[in-house]
Image (cartoon, rainbow, N blue to C red; front, side, top):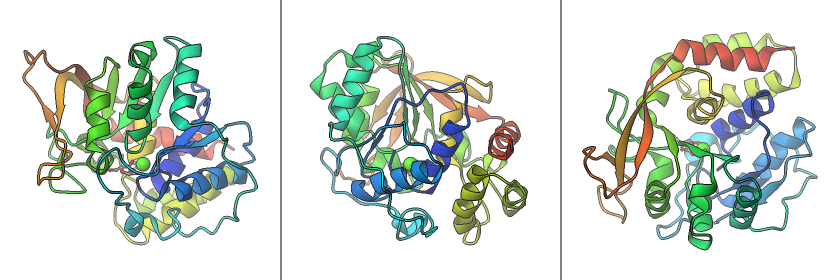
Length: 301
Ligand code: RIB
Ligand code: CA
């Protein structure tokens, strides 16, 4: 996770999803410098009295490209200036790639990696442990803009989605691996039917529990500045809940690396392109059902 606001909401949703057991969170440079992502992750967990989920700090920069960040959107503290106190909890001293590799190797076929930031940590784990990808259950990731819907355009460049754009070399390693990938891209996460509005914020503000109150504070920062709040990361997390919210196509994906105008493009290749592994790419979403689920999980008193 590159814990900015929507990553934080994905953590809150995960804590309210009995379908998941969160074994740990690795942080990665993305929305914010990795140390701030770690602090923000710890702040959220601590505020919700959750101290049994290890947080492991990951890569402070992409494999090849310079760190860029997106604090202009998430606020100077990366969490919409909600001013939670500095956390008493600390990150674990293990390396993020080792935590991923050990968790997966100890539970072959059982672990789903849910990636809501650049794929740097996962790529490094795959580089250190060839064959790790085949031991995963799957990877559910928020990333890419596949041109499958009218919303499937870029948000960091006109062509590329931020998580992939920030570390295209890492994304190439992950998409070229043997992992089973479910990719939730902007094609569905920018669909207004799946986006929060001030109407939804008002509903959440009526809910009287710590998760809903914290979520409302986080959401308010965005809703005060934008008409829609695209819940990229909570939406991606729901793809791991096995609730039928999405339609998918399966296709080989090429990631454009380097730092040219086409950096971070996620290109769907013809099916017969056997040089690339296929991934499942979301092309439809039941936005209304997603928002119902999101609000009901937050507001269950
Ligand atoms: O492009 C949106 C993605 O980039 C989200 O995961 C957001 O948190 C940022 O990481
Ligand atoms: Ca993110």
